[in-house]
Image (cartoon, rainbow, N blue to C red; front, side, top):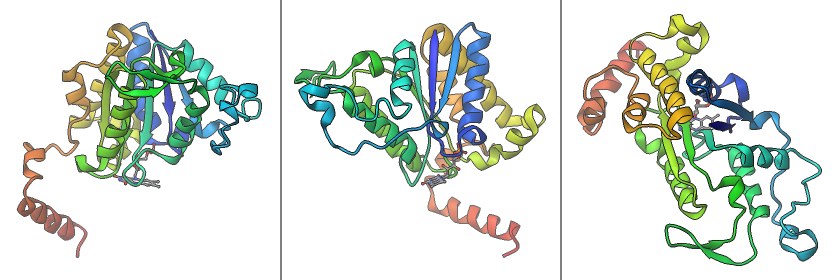
Length: 255
Ligand SMILES: Cc1cc2nc3c(=O)[nH]c(=O)nc-3n(C[C@H](O)[C@H](O)[C@H](O)COP(=O)(O)O)c2cc1C
């Protein structure tokens, strides 16, 4: 399996998104897969201006920037991959601007009349070789609430339906700040729940390389809350519990 990850973090290789992708890569390569990451922050990606020259007969499906930036080369890598990973931190309740800027460039490859997608939706004809293949969404954020990642997940669910691209996994890493010591201290920083989550990412990589998708069990483990409080997701539904947690946090900060 050839797995191509697109890292949409503006912090590029130094961020948590890359760190999580590296864990997937460890598992995937160990299982015999080929894993490559394109760090979008290191690429030259011009924003689509909506000029629509790519939809005129003289320049059909060719962006005016195709000789000027790196997008065409990334599309070529995407064509050669079996599985794609769209990895983006949550930026103000959505995907990063960098990831969106890149995805907007798909516009130049679509057009030429309507088609009916597998899910029964009308859509433009698209270059299926680029993006109509199984993909994983990986997102990470500082907040502990599932609500924070809702738009990112919904965005890629819509994407999957219109582009006939099956979702092979959804990796959602909340409370990334808690990974700080694991990120800076390597294996020594990986204890308890964090070590289990890291192992789940490696397992997810193995599963992508061997089965082409992440099993629900592994995904559940990779996405679990990092605070080792039993029934945390259930407790978080109660305002009373949240107020108690806030009081405790305030005390710890000496307020
Ligand atoms: C511009 C910006 C907006 C952010 N918005 C949110 C947000 O809406 N919700 C959230 O939980 N975290 C938010 N964060 C925190 C990031 O999601 C988090 O730090 C993530 O790990 C960054 O990924 P990276 O380390 O790969 O860059 C934001 C960070 C930045 C820089």
